[in-house]
Image 1 (cartoon, rainbow, N blue to C red):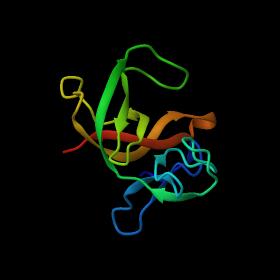
Image 2 (cartoon, rainbow, N blue to C red; image 1 turned 135 degrees about the vertical axis):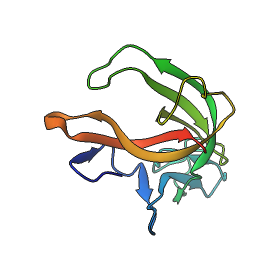
Image 3 (cartoon, rainbow, N blue to C red; image 1 turned 30 degrees about the vertical axis):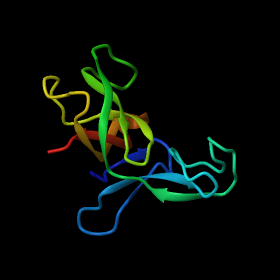
Image 4 (cartoon, one colour; image 1 turned 90 degrees about the horizontal axis):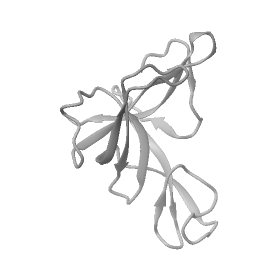
Length: 137
């Protein structure tokens, strides 16, 4: 990830692993009462409402559940850009921007991998950085 001027979209959504590749991992929670996972991390389980949740890294590879290619601009985001839902092995469905795609190659059911990068520009051209997914190569 380019570390020039950037701002996180929201702190605590992901972490970069140790090691030379600094691979990203989403941070979710696993409930100690019912065993289910959730993202983003929170203080109580969204399923059983237990307060016994443990922060945990989630898988970095998932399956594209659905997607759309957007052709209209939104503030600080130029088209075309793609957004989609990704199903992770832990049973979590994550909404994210898609990166490094060509429309012809995007396909429901394809494997995608987690990456980190700018999602839009902020004040003074700072890059707003968050998690994204890209086709697994």
